Image 1: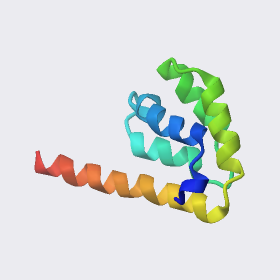
Image 2: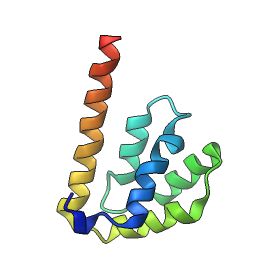
Image 3: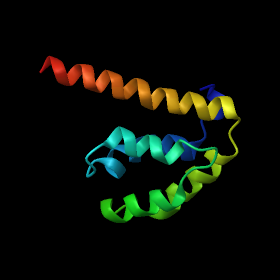
Length: 95
């Protein structure tokens, strides 16, 4: 994603995402579900945040900023999540 597309709230989301999905069975799938559509899935984020004990305002700000990203930048974010998942799965098979 070009540096101009990475907003402070999206950087914060990247740092919070592991805590947001850590308690789920499929963390990468949960992360991808948040950004799969053209709009950030705020209802799903609220549910995950409640389970993880995270604050909602940073997630809501990240959702607003994701929603205004150009489609190509949104797709790049999805691709990064998928790439991380593949890396994670490969690393797990080595251990």
